[in-house]
Amino acid sequence: MRHGKKTNHLSRKTAHRGAMLSNMACSLIEYKRINTTLAKAKALRKYVEPLITKSKDDTTHNRRVVFSYLKSKEASSILFRDVAPKINDRPGGYTRIIKLNNRLGDNAEMAMIELVDFNELLTKDQGKKKKTRRRGGKKSSTSSVDSQTKESNLEAQVESSEIEDAVIVEETKTSEVEMETKSTDEVVDNQESTKESNDEKKNDDSSSEEEKEKKD
Image (cartoon, rainbow, N blue to C red; front, side, top):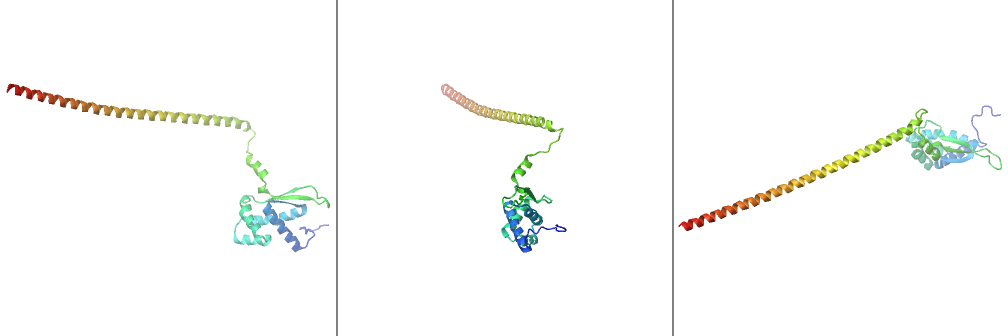
């Protein structure tokens, strides 16, 4: 009869039981899941979850407390560096116990204990799931189609506006080139007209001088 027995001594003395649980806690923190007997897994959950709660507040005091239980610098550093950021939003229940087949030989009940937030298969499924309502289930597909059509229309409008801007820019460039050519042509014409006028004046002057000489 187990009247009033709150803790399972696991058929070991206190020092042996504490050393075994600290060793198992270090293995759980390092490998994120271990296989053991069901009784040891339940005892380990009570031992390791308060330490994980301590790791949420990264202070020197909490590091020293955790190290006094784990007795491993590597495991305590992994707990505060890798495990604590992932379980920061979880208010408890950091481990999961899954029962396995009984062990051959002594037929002991076996179990796997793991950290909940480090199960990649379950975390991937949770990330893919989306919250939907019963009435809004069918509307989601139509809304997605509408959004796609709107996006395509916007892209077409943007492309057409870009093409129009390019055409306007080209027209302005061509108009500027035409203006420049016209201005150059006008300057050339003016220069030619001035040359012609100067030549006419020279001819007139020469003819007038010849007439004067003849008269004389």
